[in-house]
Image (tube, helix red, strand yellow):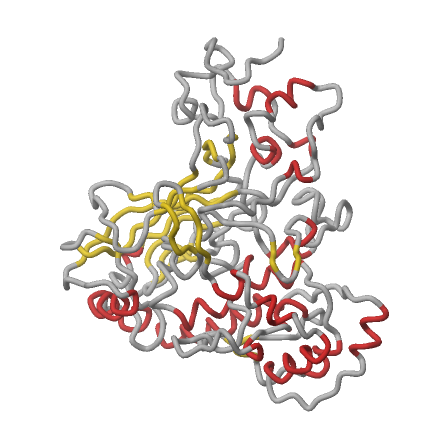
Length: 471
């Protein structure tokens, strides 16, 4: 099984990224100009060189963004100013970037970031095509820091570039966490051409929104933030950017709810309504059995070099107060292995005027930690020396922690973790929104009111709602 790992990686990278042809999205004028492009092009860098002849500032602008640097410097709750971004974040899917660079950077919009020698100041390292291909034929190979497939017809692709489509963004975002819909319960390949029942904004029968309709982009800087990589917030996309209150005609009680409850809470009652999403990843079982198993849906349930998984469909979110900021656990910080460590968490509470109740996917994991230092380990997973090949945790920990710049004692165990991911996409038609009894039913409802800071349902307990309802 192990020797087939990289073959599967390459196939998954090329097939998943380009199984659905992107819709043309270029103006007639741009098409005429692009039709004059001629090769020969040896590789993607040659195409970038041609792009920059006209789009002189494009690479410079893009190289200032977190999509390029995978890093930001933010004022983070409880910490002050620190370095954040994908480079520094911990997750409980594939741990972290530092020790697994050549695999993680398959989703970096550049060519060849496989080690610390990568030149972030070279504009020719920018991959224009991964975001601007409209043919569906452009491919990047896996396992080498993101390189263009040399079999690509670069001239054909270059002549048919256009504005990014959902398919372009989905190349990475639909497959985060090592597979389709694994990480984000509200992002999947069906959103390239979704039915209205899956998403009223992206469906061609409704809004047919491109991602940048909400994630407004200027000078290649794309608005939006994820709480794990960008806990300092400050660049959030909100429903109320378009749907300004009051928005519920003749239903003032709903608008009053919107002072405490985020739009997503009522309008995305469940996530993973299409493809199942991963809810639990237990690395501690990896290597204990050599036979792969699948669940009733045909999804991997146990993989020898990855461990055990639990998946979910039509999942009711976890609800929490959120004011746009998040707390994070950082590499090198101590954990209590007898309890569950939150790797990130939304900040807010019912007494926080800036906070609303939002829906979240909570992903739980069991991952390797240093049992003497009591901190999490960033193991080497990929390459021939990585755990997926050797199934040797000690070696993977030693090499990985050297890359992370932290000491490894030589002793390890496994500890439970959890992380929060926001639920913002796959909005169904309005008639599928929550109704009163879903949250305020006396016998059963989906809200954990005590976890939200109440003694009980505030509808029935007077004096606890921060916005008393008009009756």
